[in-house]
Image (cartoon, rainbow, N blue to C red; front, side, top):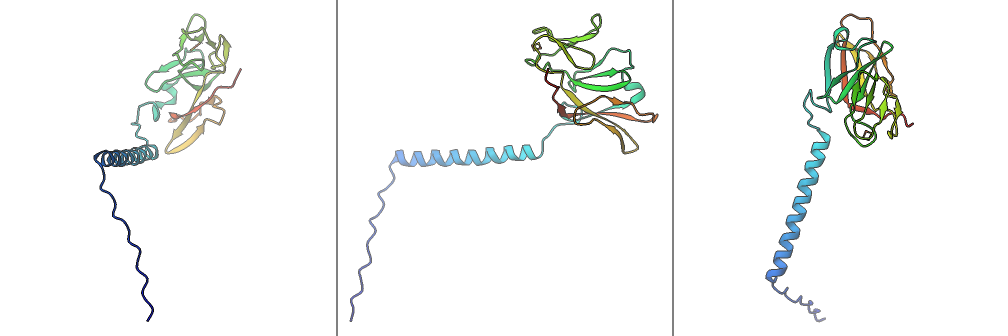
Amino acid sequence: MAEQAASPTIPPMPPLTRREFLNYAWLGSLGFLFVVGFGGAAYLFAFPRVKDGAFGSLFLLGNAGSALPKPNDPPIHNPTGKFWLTNVNGAILALYDVCPHLGCLYDWQSNAGRFECPCHGSKFAKDGKAVGGPAPRNLDRIAISFVADNRILETTNGYGDPLVIPGEPNAQVVVDTRKIIPGEPR
Ligand code: FES
């Protein structure tokens, strides 16, 4: 009769020292925090919580006939939405109100008839074109649409070109501050 091979004996694990136990516990909690943090960030990314009327959401400005500047009017600032509405020969642009140089807030200068940045002197025409100073590009634009009766009448193209105001008397203006279109480099 063949003898059964003796099964190898596994030496018992030495007990964890207090230092090893603390190291494992620390690593475990770090991993837990990573999973929770990563999952939370992914959740927030998938469902961005931007309330209406805050930058990063849609701004319903009302009737196009009353909410927009006329051709010879100065641009209208909306500080909450971070944009200027400007009328360029009868068409409308929404310009992001942050200077494309280093991020200061520029302002409209009525006397000069242009936007000027107080930080380093960049200057921009009424349509956002950079005309002086260190700004590397024209002002960034924000997408706008005209809507009526749950229909989109006109919407900004990929370049953010000025939108002609539609003839419909009940057209409403919507500025979509989720969509910023970088200005053209100089
Ligand atoms: S930040 Fe506007 S010119 Fe520098």
